[in-house]
Length: 315
Image (cartoon, rainbow, N blue to C red; front, top):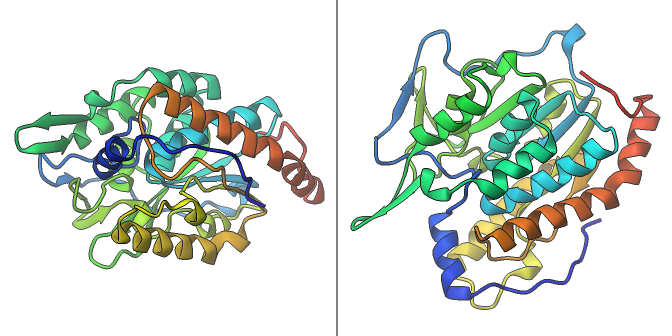
């Protein structure tokens, strides 16, 4: 069940600006417009390959999209790690793909938290007289640096990155190839940041197809699925929110609800409606991610017990 937590709204005008531009470090929204559409071809291009029966995952962690709210994923990782719960597959959409890439590489939750709290958003987004511009190349380089250039299939944990085909918003899944390119595609927000062309097909934000891609984990063979939804609660929508935002939020929630029953454990921290990038906001998201994950621990342990998966299970 969702947790109900007390909250307060941040300054409305300032956070509308932030949300509109989706300024987040470690966010699902940083694929650059300035340099046009990036192209990836050749044997290193992201692609899908099913795991062999002998190599299929048992415990999957699905990290959903949600822009700045993605800081909550760090809190969830901290609790899972502290309790010896080690997924052998991470499925990430949008900001979830970014956090997921760092975790799949083998970075600890503490290391990811340190990065999340220290990084400067200006590394990825600039402001000029013509407005805001994103630098998807900087994000790609950031991921390549922290994953040491390893492809998806070479990471410590299995990682599946989702994106949406630009022509019809159908779901695409990448399990092999260039990790930075896959994350760049998964975080390319329509209308704000340029799509990514992979082997002749254009992709954008995985959030457009399925914000919390639980079915992907099931299709890849996972026996147990822990899903994390960091989207805003519809009941938290302020009366002053633009109607377009309400329509978007309802559509997003409907997509998530279709797949929610496929998860063994569904974690949905309450992170307020308006988002931000301040230190206080980042810390709040991490803390509430931790609180929601702790509340879900009994259900996680019971799911593992029923499937005879021991705490401390590793890939």
